[in-house]
Every structure is written in C-alpha cells, then in structure tokens.
Image (cartoon, rainbow, N blue to C red; front, top):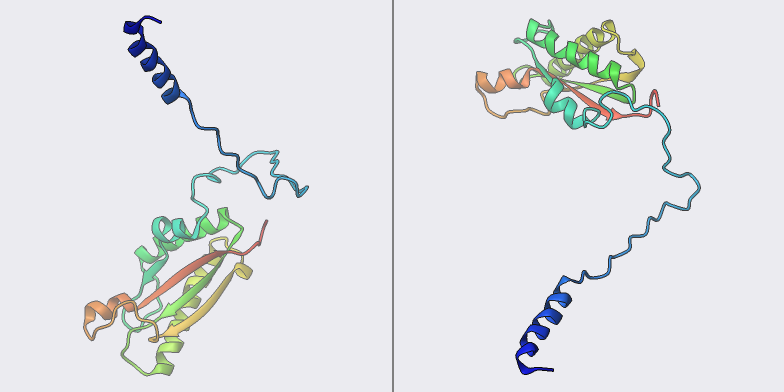
Length: 175
C-alpha cells in the first residue's frame, strides 16, 4: 500500500464504523400471547382519541364547578350554561358516572350547611337528569362547610365556597 493512501484508508474505515447503527433493542409485549389480543374491528366514536373522554377534560374544558348566591340553591344563567355542557358531555360519554358535591361557606351551623350543600347538590342532579342524564349515573354528596375551596373570613372566600362540584369517573356503565 502506498504511504499517501494510508490516511485515506483509515479515514474511510473510521467513517464506516461511525455510520453503523447499534443493534435494535427488542421489546417484548407481555400481553401478546394471552389470547385476548388487541385487535379492534369497528369504527371509533367521534372524539374517542382526542382526550375528550377524560375526567381532566371534563374538569378543565366542560367545567366542573358552579357557584351559588348566599343561602341559595337557585341556578343562575352561568350555572345553567355549565350544567348544559355537563349534561351534553355525560350523555356523550356513557362510561362515566358523576358525584355532585354540595358545599357551603363557613357561616351558619354545621347542620345548616350540610343541609344547604345537599340541596345544592340535589339542584344540580335534578337539572342534569332533566337534561337527559340517567339518574342512576349521578350521586350527590354534601360536605357543607367542611371542605372549603378558600379559607378566610371575607366575602371573596365565601363566594368561592358556595358551590357544587361535579366529579366524574369511569364507571363501566354503558360499556
């Protein structure tokens, strides 16, 4: 070999070595041979892969909380708009059930606030049922003043604690 070709030959060998990929790592699927398979044949429902059918989506995009006036259970127009979206989402996603949590501000007795929270949760449940959600998919729960969203003795905090929160979870209903 001619001495002036040696650097070219070494360069070519090193370049070829760098260009080689390490062997691919094999991944074993532990469920592949269970016989149940992951073969899906059929159409996907609209929105099935978009993340719309999640509790997080419900909470952040549909809206899970409505607010009430002092000592009231009446639904204002903003609350009805949120509940209309909730009813639409729950009707579309039959695999979810809901628990409506009623809350109250810290003023008043424990007993009064538990009863007020129950009436608020009941008002939400009735509205959802009237708008097409099956009653068996909705439960109510009252926390009264026991689980405040804000803790202080000012009207701004009280207003945030006079609420009903709809919590959804996959229940297997409809699937």
